[in-house]
Image (cartoon, rainbow, N blue to C red; front, top):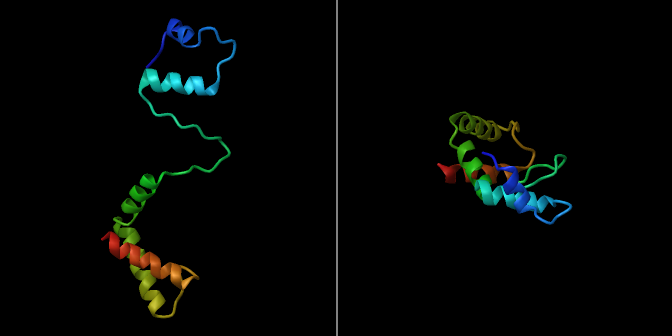
Length: 100
């Protein structure tokens, strides 16, 4: 994917400076990408849809489910290995059961 110098000059015609938003617009219009910018030092933020997809993938993994089942058995036997918060643990188990 590339853009000619002429196209670039035409896009920024009459501008002595090119703003970042202009570059983003150029990329989106000419290459069909949806561009999101984020500072290097910031933590990535995920959309709700991305979070849902990741959660679904994680809780379909048999290794993860096995660890949660073992943690639940341990919890029932008085061994707290997963979480110090009973409510969070119960909520997680409920969510896992709903995913299956």
